[in-house]
Image (cartoon, rainbow, N blue to C red):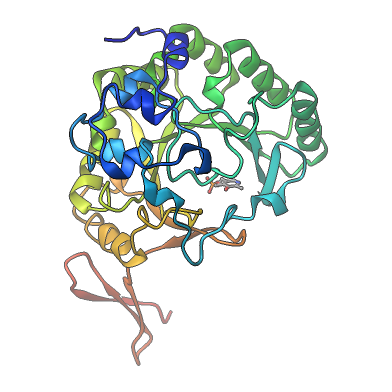
Length: 356
Ligand SMILES: *Cc1c(COP(=O)(O)O)cnc(C)c1O
């Protein structure tokens, strides 16, 4: 079916609707995509494509990576760069939003492109995807000069599509900077290309501790034996892992599905970290679900499953406001005696003596 070599996976990826027609029975909405007008090219690694239902166009994983004509409809409130990352760009590769940490975008390449990508304005836009050495050095210089940066989030694109030696170069450079306490890598590789997590890669990564991984998971069906093996290797190397999940209409906007995902993640030692409201990128209306729905899912988690299974539900504020957490209304205000009134997971009211 396919080879478990990651280079083979990348060079044999599906790159067009035509390619996909060989393995999928395409719907008219999929067939009618005008590839030249789409914002984001198609790329799906054979391994990940093997998880897709070939007959059902509404299959959860299929919808996340196979484009449909709906992608070409731009709706009100959508923007090319809704998080205004361009405004916070300090060097070609650095987005500096928060006081003590930066986003270091090291490549614009991913092994598989998600149709709702928050960075669809910048990923896959250049033919030589990885940033140049000069641009990397400029970013490293920026981090060196700004002593308040204690946390560097290497992202892109997907940094784990870089060859081991290039990735190691970046990690080694960052580790040399004394004020950089933790390094994080944002990736979907353990999900879409678990073959990339080789013993050699893991051995290299563990030299640069404390190193964290933020992994983009979407659906419980992604947790296959290959992904389990990859995450187990990473966890055994002492790399703490968190999952970042985008809330997607008809894909995972359901408390039972999210809970199942969270439980499967904990079994492979990945902590559900963020549940993101889908960013209003151009052509994303068919993916976006209401914030009310997101709050309802959160309400069905707290109290009903392990606290470890519960992510922060956040909206990344359009215009560049950063991540804003949302919680169902547990806090009901103060009564006349100064007690704080709280509602628990069973909808019962409790008072906390907050007047001392
Ligand atoms: C998400 C994000 C971070 C990291 O945020 P945490 O809440 O610390 O995980 C840093 N910079 C930017 C620009 C981000 O979007």
